[in-house]
Amino acid sequence: MLSTISLSRYTLLKQAMKKNVILEKRKTFRHGDLRNALVAAGLEMARAGGPNAVILREATRQAGVSPNAAYRHFAGQAELLDAVRSACLSRLAAAIEDEMKKCRPGRDSQAFARKSLRAVGMGYLGFAMSEPGMFRTAFSVPPPVHEQNPANTASMGLNPFQLLSLALDRMQESGLLGKKDRKDAEYLAWSTVHGLALLALEGPLHKMPREIVLALGERLVVMVERGLS
Amino acid sequence: MLSTISLSRYTLLKQAMKKNVILEKRKTFRHGDLRNALVAAGLEMARAGGPNAVILREATRQAGVSPNAAYRHFAGQAELLDAVRSACLSRLAAAIEDEMKKCRPGRDSQAFARKSLRAVGMGYLGFAMSEPGMFRTAFSVPPPVHEQNPANTASMGLNPFQLLSLALDRMQESGLLGKKDRKDAEYLAWSTVHGLALLALEGPLHKMPREIVLALGERLVVMVERGLS
DNA sequence: CACAAAAGTAAACACAGTCCACATACGCTA
DNA sequence: TAGCGTATGTGGACTGTGTTTACTTTTGTG
Image 1: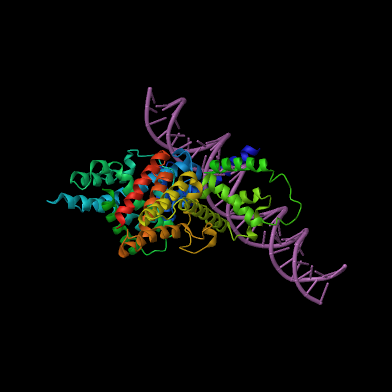
Image 2 (image 1 turned 30 degrees about the horizontal axis):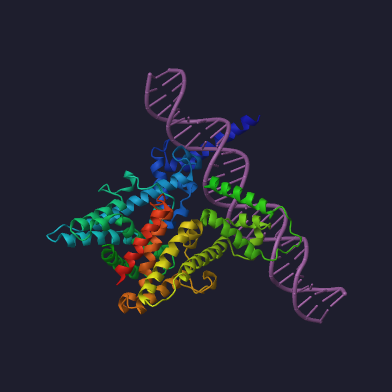
């Protein structure tokens, strides 16, 4: 009795959905690329509202799929968020890369090294200012450590940390940095820019105009360059 | 997400039962000090799980009160969280203050200035390491800017930012810092320590041992001192 | 071509935040 | 001292989220 009722109800609902929703967005029962679609939707939510705005049900809604379908691709919301975070890190790496590509090695290797370090710092800060939601998401959740995860990198295959290491290597090679000072200098340099970015995004400086933040960034990079050695 | 929430809720309930907060029905219809009780409960949740763990309903539960009672004291969860954030900032200020009290002015005013700056930096970092949940909460939500809010200060009546300003003033007064370099130096110095703290708490360095983080902090303070001028 | 695995659906549950209407007791005034 | 307005707390209901369990449909493979 009950089974027949629910069965007929099920088929009726199915017909309705075929006519209304599903046929509009998707011809096949299978989505075909749901995992990527969910990450893309999550990325957009992260861009708009940061990590807390990454809603699993909303992602499935945007993909035109039932909420539970997500669980075929992610263990839960946390895992989806982690995939989104990885995508955000990748965008950050791309932004830094764009800045670094502007520096070409010339005769003056010290100038090249300085430009490289500056490119990393300002690329980092620039991304934080132009894409605050993605930047906050990139560093929000306890992420896996250094991890050479290809998903975090851009076309050069280096993640933000490695791009910074590259710039610091150039500093050392050109004689601007001693071997002892070079050690772990990544962490020191990274801290400064990361700190300013977060203070400006969600800290006490969040009302400070972007130009001033970037101007502070310039001073910061100089401070790092001078203070490291 | 929900699993972690219920988990923390479970432990919090256990704590509550230890203290007999819930089981002891209060005799009076009025609570008497509900607002403070809610903030205290929220502070404990923040300490244990950061800003996202500050649950309004759970706070009312610990206070032995119905969920809606909170709305007589806060416009909503965001406002409760803001009060908790303010309390966290106050604890941070107290931690820095404790460090600064160790520096006594002697004959060498430059040494005093250096010690002061170091105290601010290491007090800040030390609090971040020992109370990660409260530290993250203190800077999580878009907070009001400088705001001389007494709730954010400790016994000296200075918030963390003002304590840093004080240390930098000592640097300038003792001749370690020129007038031009002094301007906005707060932001530069703060950025470095804040950045390291967050990278170590919820960034790529979150697995780095605390001692190493603090050692990096020492180098960082030296870098600031040398790089500012 | 059968059938197991992959991928999606439906229904239900617990919990969070919030709004509405209602109840109670505290404190002031008459 | 009685009355009454208001601050404070209660109860119930609604929406939205994450998640689990049981079911259905498709696909690819032996």
